Length: 180
Image 1 (tube, rainbow, N blue to C red):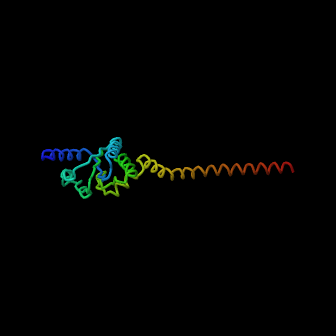
Image 2 (cartoon, rainbow, N blue to C red):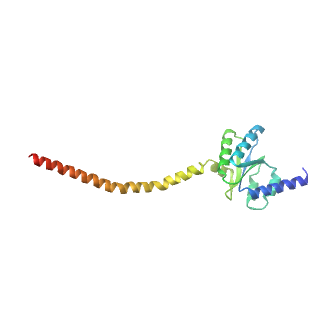
Image 3 (cartoon, helix red, strand yellow):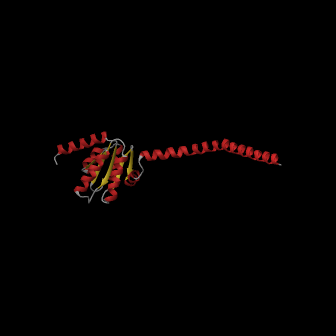
């Protein structure tokens, strides 16, 4: 590869790193070309872009910035998934693919402004969707309020039932006295 091509690739990586908020490094050794095509399509459908990179050129593009810590996770053949927006759908697609193909392994990532190792990325990929987590939060927050409302409604209800029982008891006593 000529020097001008290398410089162009580094500049392209630098631009992509500026544009994309999140990136995930993964090892793909042993995957067939057809499997990589399937993975790329799934990631593209979820809003990401998977690219196989030349490590030395990509490390040069990382430079000395915040993301330079990713260089330590780049061993063996590495593919980089670039994501702008919500990384969860892309991570879900990758996790589903990784369960079916053991060759795909998370190496690390830069997500939400934090450097993560492969284990952290795997854990993040296994979380339920955002909507489900928000639903669980709402349920947790509303449960004590629902219990409080039930307790507050129980007092007048129990009072009404007690008063009704007293009225029926006195009517029964008055009816028994009238018969005697």
